[in-house]
Image (cartoon, rainbow, N blue to C red; front, top):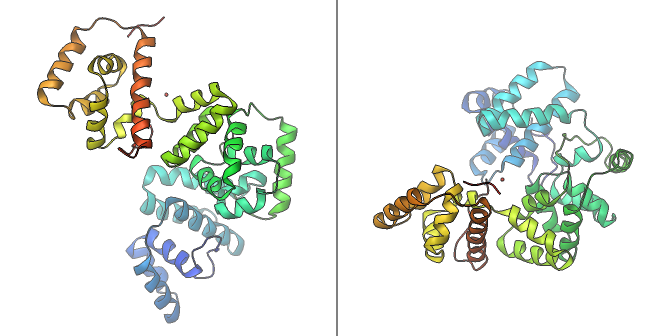
Length: 339
């Protein structure tokens, strides 16, 4: 058991076995431990009491490695899928477990670029660091934004702006070229397991990558992109954090933002906002100010959508500025008419 789960990360084999057992729940973990030697039980048991800061990516990686090894050494078939599904539900919840299991099942037969999904960021960097920037950009565009952010942090900082601009301007790839890239990657890590990945570039892809980085890195990269292509920089910035995403602000941060926003601008911005965000804002105002704003919203006539969007953009820009200054922390991001 301890050696059966592959060790492709900084975690030791014992730690990875401990993570796997912790995903199973008490009853199932006890049943597995019952079949292990006393020495292994002691090692894994000690690791289980010390494991901390386990990410969802690590859980997926550990369980995925188990599936690969089970397929290689046994003929468990469908039983393995049921077992892994239960383990993932215990660890991640039913909704996320279903998605991860689908990826694992697809990953059994995946090759080329898709195999990168299961690799640690540093391993991916070692594979691509000497490739042409356009190749690196294409590879990064095929990975999830959070993982791309981690890989980017391991690449030379001087390359970040250029890579983000290349990803933002990717406009489809010829199938023949993509197939060749698959073959190149496959030759570099023959036999690696992976999953089917979402693959496309564009401004939205870059916005998602930047959202996974800190405010300082975001600001630096946006500046670099804007120097090369001002319109693209603005487009990416608008996609990075929208007005609706303000619902993720903590109350103290929302209160600080509201102190910076003129009431007239807020009134216009709220004309095309869902009730949840409105209530979030009302709850962070004094009772009198909230009642006045509610009354003004009801009394205000139709407003051009362009005006609403401009007000929302201005307020979102203020929130980003406060975040860059360290005054607030942005919450997690959540996309002539009249409203």
